Length: 68
Image (cartoon, rainbow, N blue to C red):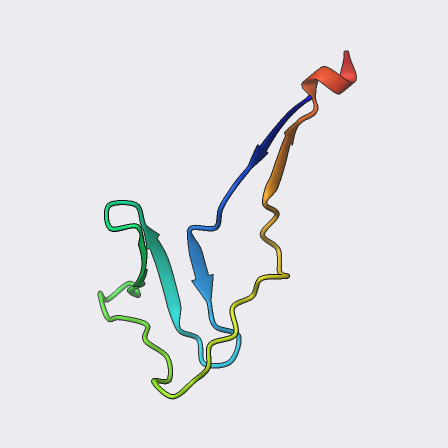
């Protein structure tokens, strides 16, 4: 069984809707944009609460070996 640890590439604040995307070139989180190209900044005074216990699963397994 092959195990790989993944990192998130997009995060969204549960309180104000701010959305950020990971930028590999700069090694930082950057504001994401909507379909019209507007930045999704959320509330400037929000203490952002990122959905760290949501649907993202950091551990990825290759169960092909387990089936054999």
